[in-house]
Amino acid sequence: MPFLPSVEAADTDALADALAQALDAHGACRLPAFPDDAATRALREELLRVKGDLVPAAVGRGIGRGTRTEIRGDATLWLDDARTGAAAAAYLASLDALRVALNRRLFLGLDEVEAHYAAYPAGARYAKHRDRFRDSDLRVVSFVTYLNPDWRDEDGGALRLSLDTGDIDVVPRTGSVCFLSELEHEVLPATRERCSIAAWMRRRA
Ligand code: OGA
Ligand code: MN
Image 1: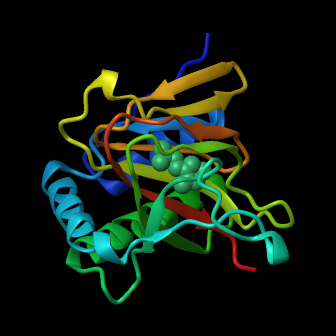
Image 2 (image 1 turned 180 degrees about the horizontal axis):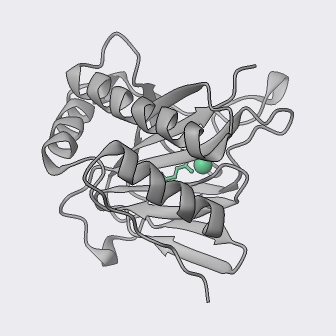
């Protein structure tokens, strides 16, 4: 039976302890209280404010690169873009603190964090993929934060994660999910707009 552990902790070090252990044992983990309610609200408000600046995501590399909504239907904006604000900066800082704490425990050589806001319109999906690019393994840890406090299970839009032990679905309401970037996963279509942040901890090129 697939099992996705949940970790909650009072501070970054305790969270990193639990997260490192969960990633080591299961390759993935939920963080239901990260970020906290106030930060989640601020991030959602900021995403809605910059929504007009989000750009449809492209897939593929080189000459084959382009928008293919049947594969990937979200629109994104990097959190370090000048048009984002204080909520994005605070989120990047807290994720970076977690990266440093995680490095001390797992020796993954995580050098930096990158993150983008993402909005999936109703019906949009992201077909099964890995976050590691085919020709590089810079992305080591994937981190997704959900910004949909009033999401109901029947709204759909689950993240389907393929663990060694089987597939498991994560409802995209609030909190975060963290997994090794080598794991396959997909975003199922929803009946309404689905807001999130996708982040990665990566090695330097
Ligand atoms: C991604 C991704 C998952 C999600 O952006 O690469 O897999 O649940 N997102 O939004
Ligand atoms: Mn992904």
